[in-house]
Length: 311
Image 1 (cartoon, one colour):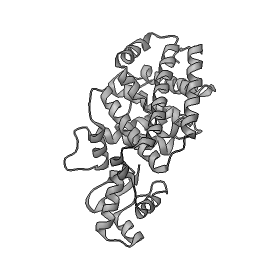
Image 2 (cartoon, one colour):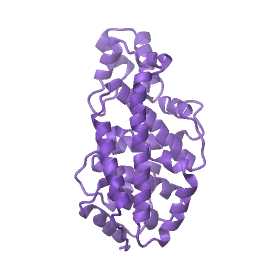
Image 3 (cartoon, helix red, strand yellow):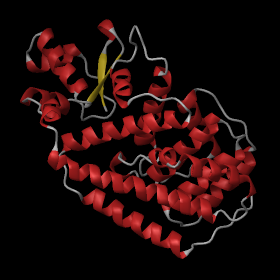
Image 4 (spheres, one colour):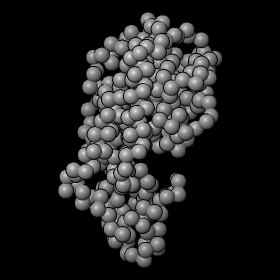
């Protein structure tokens, strides 16, 4: 097993305390379900945007939204598969690892990696298992656990663009597992991209670090930055753009359509809407199109095979 040590410096302790305080404020902040879904959708778009940006791929959030809302398009975006892959990964985390008491194993990471890019990674499985046990056996703060797990990915797997991005996803995985998803809103990649030089310098230093306290401190600062931006987004819900407000001004039938998607994994079709509300195909299509445009549901498939799922 790799021999890493760290120290809970006063700076790190202060950062972790602030993280817990910000997390509590976000969890207790009053917000309507529609606004929360809207913010979660925007956060997903931001995660994908900044994750791609870290790879040198610049795609606007508007284009990402259009691509995710119209999968299987006849003229897909050049990076559509990457975008859909990241969306698939965060759906996987939400449905499989949110507040999960199971211990994350090397096999779990292999499955996660397969969900991410469809392949597998090569590493010393015994060493990775020992590292994962080390991370999870100690009752450490979730941010420290997530940072250490990310570090082990970066140092166990040959460093590449894929392994670097996968390490960020593993960071999320450990946070979700420990209930630190924070309403699925934080976007940590934004901090790394905004401070790209310091981030790249930190990555190059990892191989020579015996004491990884600087990495833990750096990760904690990234978390704080993201949580503060999340709180700012909450406050801005009170000063919405009237033009955007109409997008989320749903009619009663459209709200009831959303109720049909309460059951996890349900797939909604145009015919189901027609039967449930005794409306025409055109009316059902309009209702579904508005919900897609609002970012509340996603259209999948095409033609008669089209169905809709909740974001």
